[in-house]
Image (cartoon, rainbow, N blue to C red):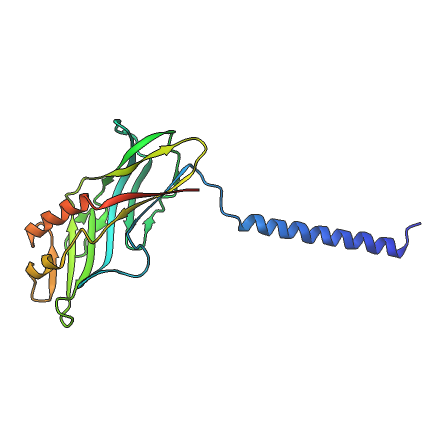
Length: 232
């Protein structure tokens, strides 16, 4: 004979089971998504974040790369296939790319470098042309005056980053990788102190203005990036 006490026990067990399943469901939803590859990639700067990067008397407030695609190169073997296919717009101050670079599947191998093929997909508000790199900042020569500076180019086709250490990819390891640019190499205080300044306190660095400095910065950019890697 089923008593009221038995019925209450059954109902209680049922409610506890529902509560347990609900908690498990929420915990599953809170877990990080399963990676869709074995390599994730960010492009950022030495101190990527919301705080601008300061170096003595100038500050870089914005730096964006237009990227067509990214290829990882095995030792003594160039890659003809993009591992990350753009186009991307990568803000290397904030470390945010649009769209997000995310994950890719990199075949097991020993990799020694990465090639970033640039794309002129950045709109230049000062001209009718598109650029592959646009960087903005402020120069403070004496703590009183402030000059805005803009560097822009559409002439860099590829940035090759040679790794300090070989990246060994196998079938059992997931890597979080960052291509990190060191902005202290791009500009110096001496550059700005010798640059031509417009009447509205702008230092323009492009193919028309401050051309010698423009060529120096292009060369420096090519040598300013390195790879950081973290095993997951």
